[in-house]
Length: 300
Ligand SMILES: [Zn+2]
Image (cartoon, rainbow, N blue to C red; front, side, top):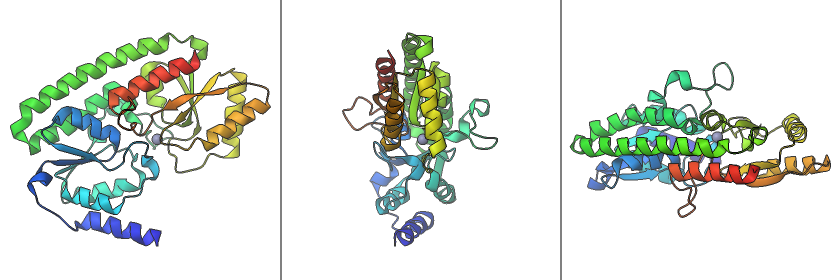
């Protein structure tokens, strides 16, 4: 039944059921994740309505569209997503949707030479943690917005420039903050491999229990290898993520304890989704701030 419902939802998105042409829909931008939605919001301000399919704490790798997503995607004037197969099962839908409406991904303008690969052909999709390249990749999104809403061109470009300056400033500030952790302790261990771009941007070694996607469970070998690494490198803290179950990481913690080494949970990091309203990590910049502060506190 679940599969049938999923197929029906996909057909509705691709074929365009229930299209409602209203004045409000003319201003509706639908983004895949809370991270893409916040970045678009920084550009459009209160001129347009920005909605996100996936809310706070939702894992994009395994996300299945819901009936309410059909309505949103069909009503939207523009659909914005990350790309690089981050939105796992949704990727093909966005592709098909682009045949009949405006759809754009951050992937389009992301600098090719900055892409990290998990093997010869698979790009690591957690590109928003390379802050400079992420902002660069927003150029395509901003151009698309200006194409659709030329009356706001000046305002959108000015907002984008202000956001770019803020992100550059925040990146410099957070890099300095992480550099205050003694080098031998600058190791970030998390549930899934979402922090390679983060590590490159902010100067910290990263290691994870699961691969770049959460669609496959970690195996026994992954657990044993990570436990060995923690004990050998005398790691003090590991970090859970808001969009991934902490269960597997907690079993690592117990195994480490059994080996006579003490390691604690250093905090919760926001990897693939922002935090809920009021969490302090409910914006792109807030999320970066929260992550760096938690890492610094956990590893000190
Ligand atoms: Zn991820």
